[in-house]
Image (cartoon, rainbow over all chains, first blue to last red; front, top):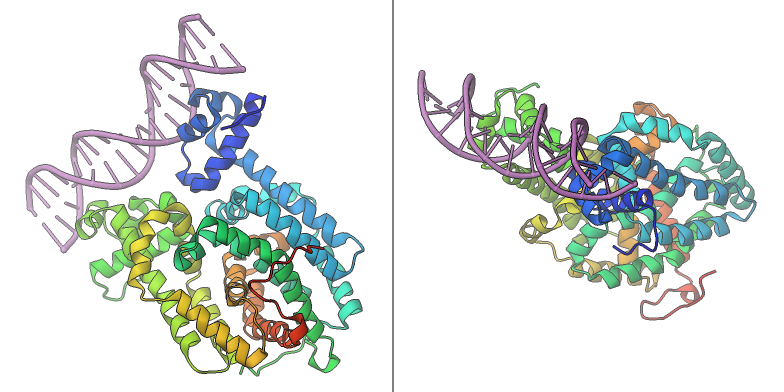
Length: 219
Length: 219
DNA sequence: GTCTATATCGGGATAGAC
DNA sequence: GTCTATCCCGATATAGAC
């Protein structure tokens, strides 16, 4: 691993990032992290008392890195379409270069839900406030009452899933690394367009979806 | 665990399913699987030689269960919108009741990409054929040349991600189980509408996206 | 701070009785 | 087929020299 004058602690964190990414919490080996950092196991325990704590440090970093930007982008005053564009462009870059992050978060939630609670509390995000902000903006720009949570889920899904599912999709379609990377790059423009198109169609007031309305028709 | 006259092998498979789902491959313990099945470790090795093989059996089941139906739905002759509707309705049910499946597959790919090859070969799916089928249908019904892989990725993303990310989203928004389940149910109608809206907007030929065209503008 | 050597434990796998 | 007891390796963690 290339380390341009990194302190030992940074080297460890960076190595742990890589290995936890590759193997998940249970699969990661302290030895492998030590090798990756170019030091020995004992030092890991000198800096971080245990594997658990090391994981927490890495996870916490990843999570705040990922969530912090989202907050800024979506609470800004730009048109929704621009926000989605910014979000996609920014995140597909960040996530692609650190593809361990979303995986890591999902994995962490599954394997260690309890441990994650504190980390969420540290990232001062108010999701309900975000939803209200989004709701207002959709109403204003698209004259629609779609449940903003659905839109939010759609944005996240379209952004994150193709990165998380990369090994699966590559295997199924037998795609080499570079080709899949091209596809992800294309999505920076494809997905915002896709979402904008979908939202535009909601502009017809008669087709609006109302949150509290109970609808039975499923065909 | 409730076992209504299940054979031992079935009990083991069922227990392994549960535990691999909860913990992933590395996190799962043979002891825990044995406990879950109400037997002892030795018997696990009697039926399935190793943890590896046990995993393979479970993974293979999950994968074919998930992919088999998708094949049928998308190779049928219904209008695209109906297919998406069927897919969503069917899959959100299957996946919700067995939410371990998509997680499991993604997780499996991440942790053990090599081991999966044979399993993919068993599921006689021709993905390129599926893409061509999809491309033709989009061209015919929407007069568009969008890359069908993007549409396919979008469908999968919107369907699977909200299920996989359930623990994360529930934690962030502090949603109880039933509420999130309601949201997933709503998506059976929301998502097809969302996708249909987006595709409709492609119908304008001037806005079409051509696969081979190189586009540089990123703002 | 960084290393080598070692304690300790847990988990996958097997032997062998029933 | 199913059990108990056990092997054995590998992984976390610590002791202690430098």
